[in-house]
Length: 182
Image (tube, rainbow, N blue to C red; front, side):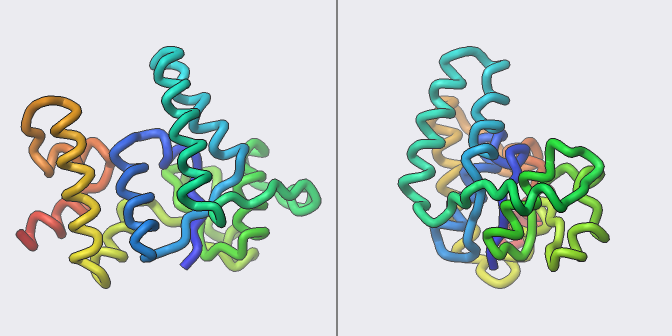
């Protein structure tokens, strides 16, 4: 399965690390464009210049780690598309150009299912996607989540309950599945 990651799912660090960790395990192919990565790094500017510089470094590392993940922008496809928010048309164009199966986003209102289905695409929220991947590959997804959890605890210098970490990442279904399996 190929999935375009919208900028809104790249910005929260824990969510991004889980989505990319699962992609690195080969459970799906993550796609984006340079514009999507720029939107993500610009969103971090509200946290200060250091946060934005760190995000830009992470975006560069992302391009290296997933060389097939970056899809070139497609103005010719964009010109024929309509979405409620014209600023999101580029995401749909990347999904079409990358032969994606879905767009992973929290932004439901700007990616209406009926418009996406006309292009053979689905809109998936990250929790639903990760829960589905966990359903078929529980060990792999749990391993990624455990790694991200350990990293978050090491960075904070104290224990963080897994349930609260996943809740803050807006992954309640995944949290329930993983915690029920423990």
